[in-house]
Image (cartoon, rainbow, N blue to C red):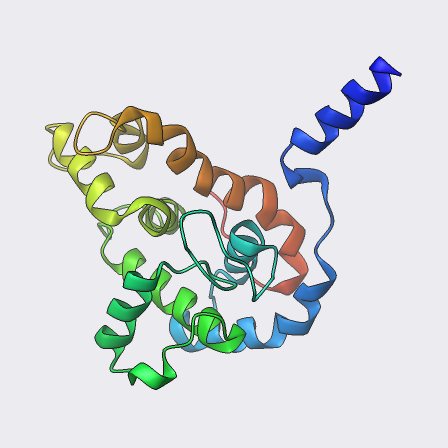
Length: 200
């Protein structure tokens, strides 16, 4: 009995890396594809974006985190308000719990963060840092980049500097694990949905 309990506990505590695509995902596939291509073009990182939704909410529009993030894309209310102001979206149309709004906002915000990563990096590394920004704020990885003292640090050098600038080192496992899980663990599951971005 103790062995069975231990195995059950281990299975519960393991990341959902071996879980299948949630059934709810199929319902929103076309919406994600439409919004991703509208923001990113025909080579949109659709598989990575789908993996991000999987990571954030498991495709649940009613998801609410302990920190107060809401909706399928898990926007914090202040971030949602800022994004709506930035994009000229009326307050009444700023709806983080609405799946279409959430997918449009997530793909747009990801593109915004991607464009703020140095273009000299590969697209994969730029997406990696954009995801770090989505998870923990772009100002943190930018400060870490400056802390390297290098004019053009690589993504790996920036990652290695996590916790050496504004961010406390205790937040590094989550922030570094976020893009790693999305791009290397979850993204392959959604390969049938669209382009998969891989490291060169």
